[in-house]
Structures are given as C-alpha cells and as structure tokens.
Length: 192
Image (cartoon, rainbow, N blue to C red; front, side, top):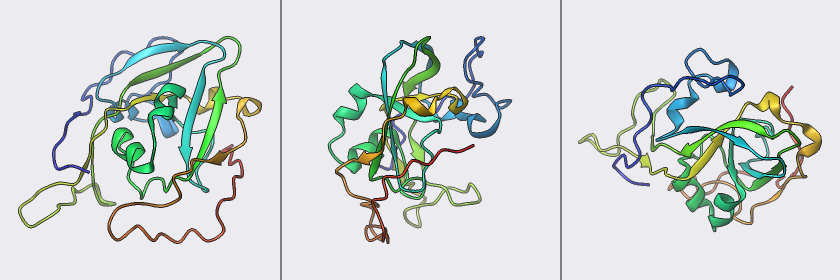
C-alpha cells in the first residue's frame, strides 16, 4: 500500500472495435465502465491455447472479467504482490484460489494493459483517508491485466480451481484474521 497514485486511471474510454468487450459507460453488467480500471490499455486478440489466470476467493465467480496471462501470474510469489500489482482490495476478493483458463480455437478479443492504482473508498464512493490530514490509502497497480467478456468463456475450458499457496484473507492491519472457516472449497462458481 502506498499514499500516492503511481498509475492514474484512464479517464476516457477508447473507441470499442467490433467484437471487443464494451467496457465503456454504455457497457452492460460487469463490463460497465471497466476502462477506468486501466492505466493504459489496448485491444488484443489472444491466440488459441493462451493460458489465463484469475485469482479468486471461495465466493468469487470463475467466469468474471479480470484475468492475467500466465507470465504475470508466475511473477506473483505472495498475496501482497497480487494486491499491490493488480490493485485489489481485500474487501473485493479475499483470494486463496486460482482459476486457469485456456483460450479455445478462434482466439478471444480482450483488453489488456497496466492496472490503474486504486484509492480506498467507502460504500458511498467517498475516499477513505488515512489520517486527519487527508492522506489516502492507495494500491499501486501496474500489473498487466486482461479484461474480457465473461459471456465468451467456455466452461469446459476452465481447469479445476487450486490453491494459490498464499493462504486466504488479507495482510491489512485489522483484516488479517478474516474468518475463513470451511475453506478451501476449491469448487467452481459459474455465474449464469
């Protein structure tokens, strides 16, 4: 965690090429306005056989929007690396498990780029300050993320969940003892 924004978010959505996920303010469902999770981004067509990874907790959907290439996943040695590089707050995802997807024949059109820094906000969208002087809590970002349309995912191409080896929960003070009774479940959660 830091107190400065190293990777500012994209302020304006680029033009959406035909066949690519609509991550604009006109996008639907989980893709709505997801352009602002990026610091920089480009439309990319993944080739058949490309391995993608998604870090999840026991309640996360396997078929959601945020993924990374194998090369990015293999750089992560502990959950702190993942939270910092991909700017994921513990309240969004308590981690502990990983999903592996192999891109099918025909490839897949996605958005790829550096994850933007994330400022801690409360449920009303107000910035949470670290002290009475207005310092912010910020997760750095900068990891190369992929945002895809979950409707493109084919369930049979998803490998069984496995443990990350990092444990579950958070390393943030006050959240490090998150109650995770009953985990790991390593059960696929597929949103319909």
